[in-house]
Length: 400
Image (tube, rainbow, N blue to C red; front, side, top):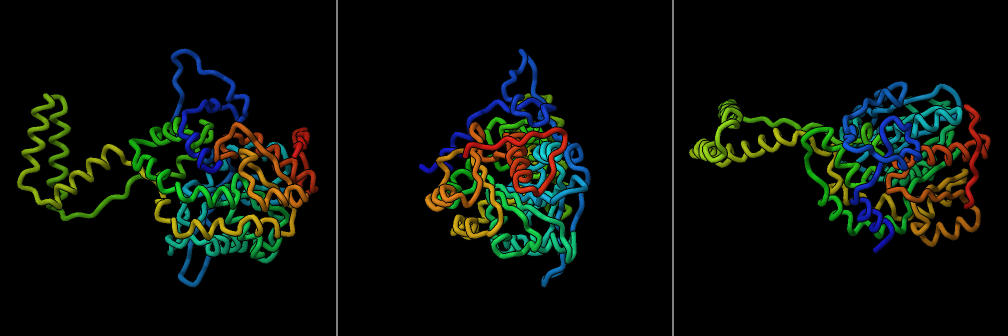
């Protein structure tokens, strides 16, 4: 079993995330909930962490696509943040607040195609080449021919796309590159078990609160503060369906009668439901069952990751050598040193990139430990004189 597979299995265990309002501080993880105190799983708006939001329009061969970005900061280099598969730009919310308070920089967190609030014509094309071109097109649409200095930072799938973008020279003003918890060897090993992992997730949720609670208790996101803003970008309300007016009225009538019967005995309600179903066509019965499920669990995933399997190999194969070949300063942040593959191990020993291990994190490192990731990125920026420290921030140089 690979390290990433172990991480996915261990990630299903409940964890103790920081309390809301802790500012993402890892010290919050050490706090204990008081007796009888209930955790707050209510969603938090993006505006508590980002200064503004913008829908960037990009013209291409098939028409016009719209990419959602969230922004903060007004001076310094741009940190262009790319999220992992199934996540959204909101996964960078708490990290954004942490990094903005440490160095002078600008944040642009992008919803990649088919994710978050981004709308594209060909939503099924999630190839590394297409998504890398998207990043370059968004930069051009936002800044024209004279973009500011940009550092690409990507988590998991987003890390792979950042590398493909950099290696294809799609961002002319690129000054740095950072991958978070993505390594070719362990990623390729984990692909075989990814479908089983996805099948193990709930398909629907009763509410946003229910989705946030699941993400924390399952260990997908170990930081409650981040989960409360991040999960809003991962799930959506189930889409409505069209049906003949006759079937619609029958469905609505039966649902209303079921609600009226809730106060009666369970056996009478069940018997009435069976009587109502008799005489209906199979299509209408299936429609009823679908609507009842939608009524009880109105939220589902924004993207069906299982259907993107044909692109997984292209995201990660050859990634280590592509990363090493990029002629710019590079940073690799990992949740465990056992994730390194052979090529990166050799490259790290040769000093081709800076690496830092952040233990006691799940795969979503930047959400679980936003302060530590912010410290590592800020130190990297200051070390290479890409940005100036603010607020009395002191660089923390890693041992590796």
